[in-house]
Amino acid sequence: MTAPTRVPLSVLDLATVREGHGSADALRGTIEIARAADELGYRRFWVAEHHNMPAVASTSPPVLIGAVAAHTRQIRVGSGGVMLPNHMPFVVAEQFALLEALYPGRVDLGIGRAPGTDQATAAALRGVSPYLTVEQFPEHLRTLLGLLGDERVPTERLTATPAAESFPEVWMLGSSTYGAQVAAALGLPFCYAYHFAASSDVDGALRLYRNGFQPSPRYPRPWVMVSASVLAAETGEEARFLAGPSRVMALSLRTGRLGPMISPEAAAERELSDLDRAMLESLPGTQYAGTVEEVVSGLDTLVARTGADELILAGAVYDPATRVDSLARIAKAWGPVAG
Image (cartoon, rainbow, N blue to C red; front, top):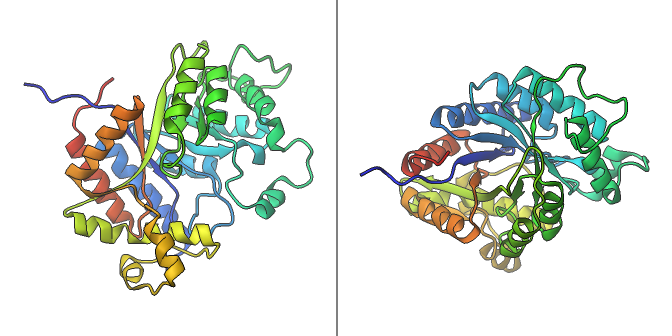
């Protein structure tokens, strides 16, 4: 009897900066994780765009994607995502057209609408340009699609690269019904950020996406990827211990006390006020932390609930070796994938 097939798995990484280490160490860790994901058979390796955050070194996805692609062989590499309101569409198109020329058939461009930072930093990124606003997001997204070969959108005399032979795969990202509706209207694959919006209406968003999907030349049917935050270890107790820093990081984000990621030992010994302790108890940090059997069971349930065509696994940890071990356990237990 053959083993059942499951949906493909991918990896999302933030280049986490840990206490006592620098940005260079975080970036080396990301490349280490990407190499492992490539060898383990994961489909995609995406990096996010965040700015002015002490715990995140992933500030420029195109630069980091180029480094990851150079150190891997077959895994698709991309952004999860590029925050389009921070950039002019032509700049993004040139960056990703160049990546596609260097690594044809391996590049994904995930597009987001959020700033990826606080408002003051967003203002520093965008300056006083009247063209970099959230209100112009739909227009800029259409322009970007045209620059990357979408025949439905004429781009006059502009080309992102002089002689493109292939184009990156463009995804719409979101954690609300807005992103789902944009992806549906433009006929794009959609990635729902469940790892930080677990309490939101994922079911409603995906229903809107599928029901409203307009087939496009490249994407004849809706395609859904859902993110989840995971950590698998030998025992449930060990997994929860290793996930401790992610919960402290989630608390720090909500209280504005930002800093590099602390160690599991420091997280376990951290003294908290009653208010912080109560808030911490309500924050998952890592949604699925346990033995590999527990994690896989949770992911199976998530696929059954959402009908996802793919899953992308997030999971901020202190040590890259912990992430590699977790991904290896999950890949082995997950088994064959469809398609």
